[in-house]
Length: 373
Image: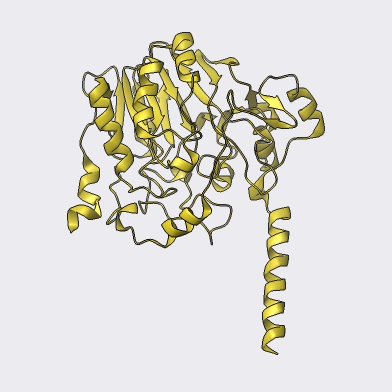
């Protein structure tokens, strides 16, 4: 009887898993054969998949991974909830349109106010970056600067790639009907269509494609990364970084990706940048070609000809084995060596371009468990 019960339990779990993988809308929608035929004319699409400019294998040592997962590591997470500065919809709506302002929501999500427009970058408002609430890691903060339901109308949403920590199903559903335009790399629009976003407001771009949006120039630029939301859709959609050029300021958003020659190419074509929002966390030697190491974050900013770095892809979730503060501490050290300016806002603290000073408090040190020992 016990054996039968165990077998039935495993069977039920297996059936549930199969149904979830095949029927859950979280996974989005793959590219059609007609779309693949169109993509085939692009240099970065080969054998039915999008590719990087240079080979970028991920060599995972699973034995090492198991050891890391079981090792006691108290500094992988903050000792307590990290601070969040609150904003409200009236503050956003009454923003001085002559100022360009960035508000970091932790990890890689930003609210950008530029030239009178309200723009969301990689909107991920969920508590866990996963396809199901049973899985994944919790956010470092219990709340965000503003609830997604309280946001005013968003003029544009810009998305870098389709991983769960950058493209969140629940967030897109809550934003639906309150966004003017979506700008994505190739193929990602299929997910949005699956989730009920109107095709008329989705704009898909390939690397080096540009588009004008009410006076703001958006350029889809290369990144060295990968994509995929399910078991069988690896690299079926494109990943990218973004150049955002307004009337007076120029911004670079790295998305995710490892170090390569594209940073210098982008710097030559579109630099200098007033600020670069640069990935610096969730790295590992096993996937060093697909995520920047912090020292490479600083060097890439030099390649981009950036006047200021705002380190991102940290301060939100633990998705790698390093201590949670290592990314910011390492990038600050390297930036000092290279004489690069860095701003380190708290979540929700505004960064206003054109100012002579920027947030630079080392706020994370108060929440590091090492300081409590």
